[in-house]
Image 1 (cartoon, rainbow, N blue to C red):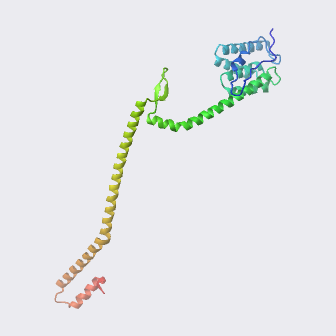
Image 2 (image 1 turned 135 degrees about the vertical axis):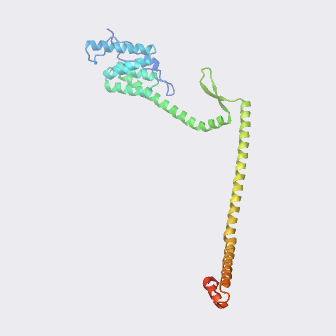
Image 3 (image 1 turned 90 degrees about the vertical axis):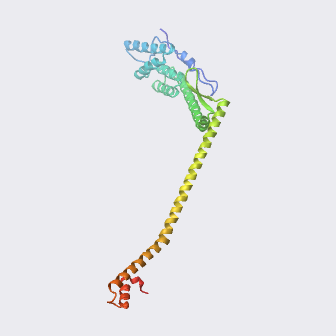
Length: 275
């Protein structure tokens, strides 16, 4: 019966910029014929655990990574102290560039089996996954900042027709530079649009100016009527009313009253005539 390896050789990256060789690490995992002695289970359970582990490893080797991850996820949930399966699950996650999940998986292995023969190799894998995660987050952050800086420029270029969308061989849209002729056509169209906008703006300004002048003129006419013509009209109407009254009284009391009495009646009727 084959004994499990006490140590694993985990390749190291030569420098921080170099990616960790997860494919090579994965190649060090081999099918098992027996479980580690610290994993206590019945004979039937041992056979089932070995079968699930070996099938998951075979699925990962043949490219069916999703099936392998599902099997290992269920296996490690039931048997977290099975360091061989738990660490294999972490390596597969790292190989799929799921570095945050891989780092968490390696930490679970170290917590569940701190004295396992794979502990040192798992710890190196944990550190490598952490470094890869930090580098990817830094790249994503720089890419996001670059996109934010370029977004206004691209928007202006797209509006001006310098950038245009085209279809590649796969039918997927991509952005490419427009030709010089297309750029000149777009510039002419843009200049035409600007001229049209300027003309429309000028027409609108003239209309607003005309309305403003009309409103000012109407206001001046109203003020002139209210403060100049209206008082004159009211005074004339008052005089006419007095004359009409005086004429009516003179006709009614031609011989009965004296002029003095009529004058007194006039003044009583129109008090504002008293001086």
